[in-house]
Image 1 (tube, rainbow, N blue to C red):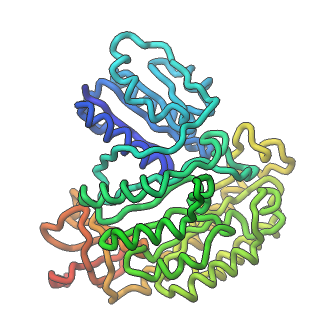
Image 2 (spheres, one colour; image 1 turned 135 degrees about the vertical axis):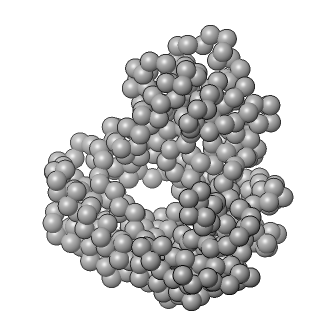
Image 3 (tube, rainbow, N blue to C red; image 1 turned 90 degrees about the horizontal axis):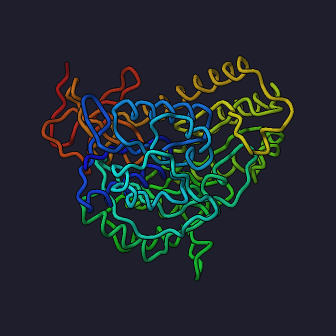
Length: 435
């Protein structure tokens, strides 16, 4: 059977889709992309609900899948929380929330037998994490080591969509790394909803620092990248690992707001000063590191002064990139009922300010590396320019001018120019052709 898998949202969703694909291929199904004239028998849409825009994109992708005439399965966070909305889309064959996502391959063969009414998932329980097959056409592997969240940030629906924090056992993590390395992956991204809380539910407990250290000791040839870590859960012991050659010089720590008033309303567990100290400490210890962050603008009650506080801390800190989002009302969250919701025009203005600042930060960080040697994973090749795309260990997205490069391989390149926000590089074994 021909099956397409389309994924929206975070790296956790991407890791889960790769596991589903691995299982389906093992069962003999052919997995094809949902593009052009492809004609899948079944379309799986792994949805996201982090913002209203994510909801909209999920619905649009589902409708696109329905138009192919295939059976359509909606899964993921939007399917977990908004089954009522998805049930109203004609042509959806099955709705499976996150609680039943791992059982999705069991339903594939049942669909052509006439299951045309949505079968809604049981949301009462979330399974423990277990070792899963993995298949991906990506150059870098995403390994989900943790799921769920025990926090209750007032704007966030993720705990409702994914349940309490659960960790993959250290034995399964190491076995997964071994399998991915054997499959030829030279970079593995450790991902989860809340990886800073990794291992706290295991018996005996094990920390993120310990599991990363264990991976590095056993599989030093593989490059390990960490996904987002909460400020209050960043341990300084990670810095010695990041300074090693096996862990990427890249860390993502979400700020959300530079105003203590807004952080309190968000139910975040740190102050702006604490965040500032952490980032400055990381930058001082690892001068080449890429530090990224997330910011929400227009949170209910955010005054102009609150926003200026955010703008100030973003300007002052040695950040290499900033992801900015307008506050989006999420059903069932505490922030939904808060007073002082911000006008859309104000949100757009604040968004524009941060986007402009983010571009400046990105360009400053990128141009610092002109003339330097970078450790890069070759990701894919442009069908138009002939350049390859790659990602450096310190999270620079680069263009590689080279011939016959192997996607997924780790190579050294030299950064030779920066134009139109693109960092052009050449492999060390190939001379740069000036034009």
